[in-house]
Amino acid sequence: MRALIVDDERLARKELMKLLEDHPMIEVVGEAANAEEATQMVNDLNPDLLFLDIQMPGKTGFQLLEELDGVPLVVFTTAYDEFALKAFEVNALDYLLKPIQPERLAETVSKLAEKERAKVVALRGPEKKLGLNDQVFVKDGDRCWFVSLSNVRLFESDGNYIKVYFDANRPMIHKSLNALDEKLDERAFFRASRKHIVNLSWVEGIEPWFNGGLMVKLRGGDKVEVSRRQAAKFKDMMSL
Image (cartoon, rainbow, N blue to C red; front, side, top):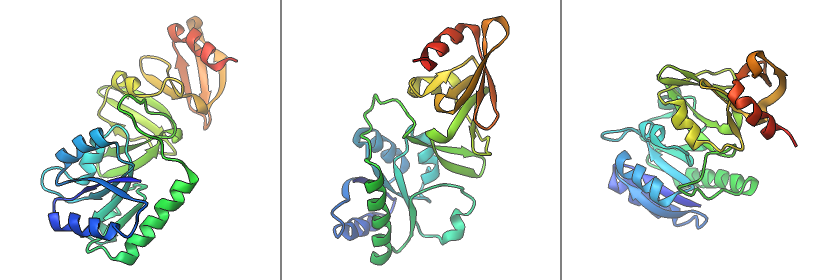
């Protein structure tokens, strides 16, 4: 796995690199001292894994994740105890408390190895659209999530924001639906109307609707109207 270390403390970066020498499955491809450097390096290097400090001068580790379109696996490294993460409902792979202990790092690497056996990490090319196997970082106020796009059933435009539907959550992100539509794989997500993008894998039923449109029912009960202009395209995509 190709890893990027993001930490404003040079000694902390060097110490982690030294510890990782005992784990050849992880190749450190770069190190960044702040979020700005890390954003560029993630775009250039496409790492599979981030060892990410939370508290850094300028932008925090969470703010860095907000700026990434596709989020690699994340292991947080923090000088604070577990309570510091309780406000953040994230599915990070793991977190390591500084100073990092070799035994604790070995546990994290074991988790990585298990994840690698379960799923081959796809290479993230710069032109690759976001599909069902990708995950994104969503932040709404003080709440944060790592969300697999396979679990997002619906995106709904609400002014200058987008409401993201997954599980029982409806966080709002500051983004336009047009910008999001350009980043999503059209084989997995469909622009139903000016206000909605649906996950095709969640479609449970379709019925005719007013003015030549369609009404789509998603698993879980959500209903989305497909505009007349998009109805023919939608029928083609959902047919054999």
